[in-house]
Amino acid sequence: MSGKDKIALITGASRGLGASIAHRLTKDGYEIWANYHSNHEAANQLKQEVEAMGGTCRLLPFDVTDEMQVAEILTPLLEQSTPDVLINNAGFNKDTLMMWMKSEEWQSVLDVSLNGFFHVTKAVLLGMLKRKSGRIINIVSTAGQSGLPGQVNYSAAKAGLIGATKSLAQEVVRKGVLVNAVAPGFIETDMTAKLPVDEIKKTIPIKRFGKPEEVAGVVSFLCSEDASYIVGQVISVNGGIYM
Ligand code: NAP
Image 1 (tube, rainbow, N blue to C red):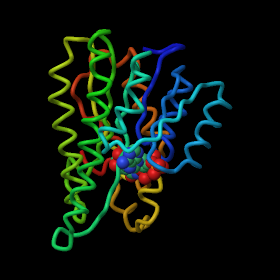
Image 2: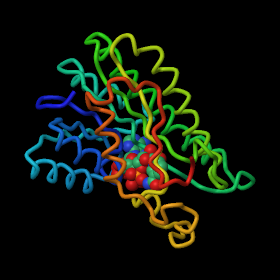
Image 3: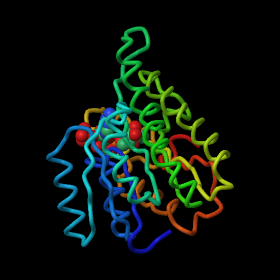
């Protein structure tokens, strides 16, 4: 699955893990279709970085929770070509204890992870099935494996996405589409910037946060021919915080 003229659609690609995955897959020879929500400045910067690496980046601003928007932007593109890999990376957290959690905080976090996965994957899947090849990688989280206090909504969203990964993997493997998940622990991005880093580091066996590139490398591997026998797995990239 490596080489020129392959397409990678990455949701939430403007910043953090998504941007790092875009850099890495550019290096691997993919044309990047970079979805993001509203941060045009970060998205334009990513496009410039990809182009400076000699790659191609198509910016696709849409809200993954909005089925109409997803269809409006993706349908004309999908009529021309089908991405070789889809990275469902867009994610969002609104941490608070369950007893204080508002309905909107519950709904919106599930919406991005679960409905976002559904809308984008549904749009791309038919083309992959017709072509009998594709890789789908869902970015989940340690929170969806172990649970974390203050993240009942986020943990439920990511655990749900792990379930979806395993079911879809079984549905489509015989059609040549391999579906897996990557579960990062604490990674240095905007999402973790306001956390008490020094306190948390003490609880991680490797004693540091991960770098986005350390997740992107695993995604790159799962997109490669070397991962041709990996199906329905959740690969943890977490410095040992959950084993
Ligand atoms: P981040 O820096 O906050 O970036 C989030 C990205 O998602 C941005 O590109 C944002 O677009 C996009 N996004 C958010 N809501 C969206 C929506 N409704 N539609 C389309 N795009 C949307 O986050 P990150 O840390 O890179 O996290 C990336 C993924 O890894 C998420 O799924 C997150 O849950 C997961 N993860 C992160 C960590 C960590 O420690 N950082 C750990 C485990 C799992 P805009 O720029 O336009 O806002």
